[in-house]
Image (cartoon, rainbow, N blue to C red; front, side):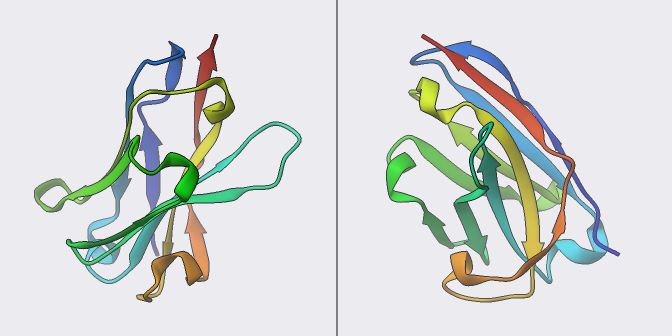
Length: 122
């Protein structure tokens, strides 16, 4: 069973930074494509970024240049570094796992964490 636990959310002002983390169960870490999604209040969930192997990543155009997805293999942890945050980035952020696939945004993400809230105030 794949377990995903997010952390690192919080409240920041416009232009601030946050680093989200997702602890992934060891048995799943090397075998799944991992991604970040977000859902703002009243909106549909949207894909943000994903990673397939250590070097193949994909990031949504609206956050490209501001958000970076990465892995810490020693700690079985997925990260999302978010810089220059804007009020429109306010959402619940989820990490998720899918069977290995590229492009990773096309994966069928069957496993989800509980989410971590990010709030950006102007």
